Amino acid sequence: MIVNYILYIIVSVVFLNKVNEQEEMEITATLKTEKISTPIYGFNGEFSRGPSLNTKSYFDSISSLKFRAIRYPGGGISSFWDWEKNKGVISTNNLKTPNHYLTMNSDIQGLNELLKLVNKTNCKVIFTLNMVTKDLDNQINLLKKAHEIGINISYIELGNEHNLKNNPGRLIMKTSSNYANICEKWIKRIKQEFPDSNIAMVGGNHQYSQDVINWNSIMTNIINQPEALAFHFYPSPNSALIDDEINFEKLHQSLNRQINNQGLLDIDPSLKIWITEYNIYWASKKYEEYLKDKELPNDRMFTWSQSLATCLMTIQLSLLPNTEVILNHSLANWIGFAAINNKTFEKTPNGIGMEIINKVSNQRDYFKKVIFNTKESTIEDFNLLGLKFLNNNNLMSKIILLNLTSENRFINIEKIINSKKYIVEHYKNGNSKTINGVEDISKTKLTIENKNTINIPPLSITIISEK
Image 1 (cartoon, rainbow, N blue to C red):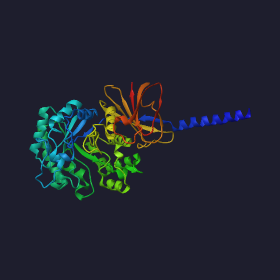
Image 2 (tube, rainbow, N blue to C red; image 1 turned 180 degrees about the vertical axis):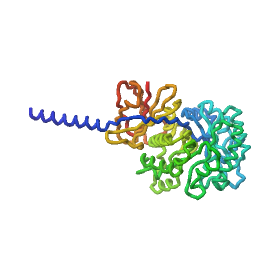
Image 3 (cartoon, one colour; image 1 turned 90 degrees about the vertical axis):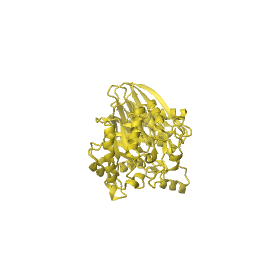
Image 4 (cartoon, rainbow, N blue to C red; image 1 turned 60 degrees about the vertical axis):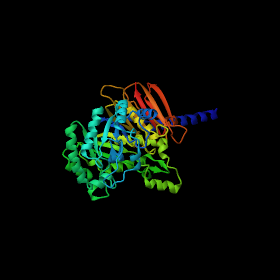
């Protein structure tokens, strides 16, 4: 009898401890009151390494990502792009045109192929103009032709990365003030032809020369009432990995450093921000040397952690002030960045992450940030991060929650949902370390009613849709 009583006491104590532990670990989710306009999410859209967008299975796979914007003809290719021949042009400025721009088939990414993609996805086009090997008249004709065949001219970017040391535009234009003065002439002419267009100049301070340390202020001082600056962010793998795996705290910090170093937070708040490229910079020479020394494969971009990293960076950038456009690098081309594998046409981890972002944000006008609190403190964004996307016309809201920790998280969502009945979808890694397509992702979908607390699995993406 005494033994049974002692066992009863022990079991009771253990049970109460478990209950108290769960209560302490339970996290309360609330919403910030600030409404932030939903950016236009999409991709840098260079297809120069093929295949053609006329390849049906490839085209269907790309279209399934449901992006809202595409950058055309892309980044580096824009400085050599001949839109009339649909391939790269041989430079007359002693610049070496990359060979794959010269040898690409003419049906890979011409205006007709672009129109086909626009009609299928209803996406907007960010035209990145060639200010290096073509003149203003030629690029005005490009925009006129695009408009003539049915592509709306809404977003125009004046060149690509002209603030970087070895960029072709930098080599031709020499100084930041020269670039700004040329932009002033181009903007005036473009506005005459397309008065409703939005135009962005290259943005981003850099440290390699006195001429670019204050790049942003030079742009805004020379140009009368500029509309937008375009930024690129590429955290290096060396700054984002621990023990050869993506560490989300380091990645978050690295991206924040780049944002601060490029002076984005210091520019005039009336300026719109376009992020026209971002990703982990898997093509880093330093990282390649590190892998060679360690005899490791360059395969971290093919893991579920890349999907999580893509969502983390996208949300992090969405929270920046006045961010209007956010384009992931990239839709196709080199597999280390691509959303779609050029050979198998399967979605990569980067593509899977962006597809989830597009799923929750499409047709939603604004979002509010989700704040996570325990009894003791607010949880850092690199552990738990979330947004609630809403629509002005009462369309069903969608919430995205990232659990970037290796533990289950019990979240009380009562204060961030309005319905007693809602759908929860969990995305997490399957049994395969390498992600070769969506079949390697584990997905569960539940309808929940009259329950305020849900379990968010470790290293997962969760979508909550209110009924």
